[in-house]
Length: 78
Image (cartoon, rainbow, N blue to C red; front, side):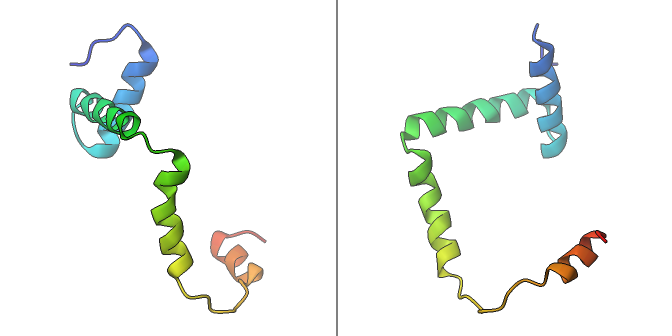
């Protein structure tokens, strides 16, 4: 059982635990480990996003334009 005086901490831990199908304690532990790794990694957001930007840039362009009517129909928009 996770004990905290801060209701928001408990709510967020419960949501993360449900999303990850784990315990609240494990969810909080992983979140803290991930945050420490992020902070200690010392990389800026720009540096962390660079590999993703490179992967996206490597995808060949088709030259085709997106069909707005098609995507509106998929989402149920009139």
